[in-house]
Length: 301
Image 1 (tube, rainbow, N blue to C red):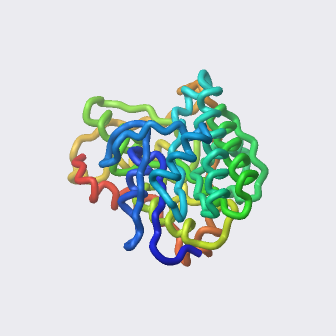
Image 2: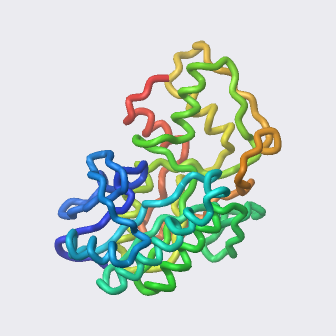
C-alpha cells in the first residue's frame, strides 16, 4: 500500500492512455510523464526503455519514484506482423527492464496488458488464470512483456489487461467511425468479433487504484458488457444525432470479408471480477462510458 508523498513515473505519457493516466493522478501525487514523442503536455524524453543503463539514469535523474505505471507500447497490431522483433523489444524487453529497475528501487510496477494474449475460443469471459494462446505477433510480444515483468519483480508487478481502448486523445475506433460516417454513405464493419469497448476515462483511475493496492498479480480491466465492432460503430455514429437525421448506412460483415494481417481473437471479453473486488466497484457499462466520453470530448455527430 502506497503511503505518504508519491512520485510516480508514467511511461507513454503522450499516448492515448498515458495522457489520461497523468490527468487522473490522485491528489498529492506527482506524476512524471515520459515519452519518445512530445504531446499532451509531455516533453519528448529520449529514453530507450529497453536499455537498462538509460532506465537507470531516468530513475536517478527524475526520481526517486514510489511507483511506475507502464503504458508505453508498440500498439500497431498489424504492423507487428512485419516488425515483430521491434515489437518484442518495445513490448517485451522494455517491460522486463522497467520491472527490474522497480525491483531494485523497491517500488511497485503496473504494466498494461492486452486481451490479445488469448485466442478467442472461450465461450465465457476470460479469467486471469486462463492459459494464454496469442494468435498474433502483437499478442505474443505483450505476453512476453508480462512474463518478463513477473519474473524480474514477482512481488511488485501488477499486470492489468484491457481491450478495445478509446479516449479523448489519440486515434481510436469510435472516432474513426464517426469521421467516416460524415464522409461516406455506407460503412462495412466486422460483426463477428466480440469484446468490451473501454474508455481511458474509466481505465486510468483504475490503474492508479491497482498501483495503490498491496496486491501484485494479474488483473483484467474493461468496461462492463460486450458487443461487436459493428455494435460499437452503430452506437458511436448514432450518438447525438437528432431523431430522423440522416447517417451513414452501417453494414455488418465477417472477419473473412475484411481480412487483416494480424489474426484477432473472435471473442475476448475479460472477466474483471478481481479488479471489481479490489476497487469495490466495476468500470461503467460500455454504452454509458461511450456516452460520457462523447459528451466530455465535445464531439458533434
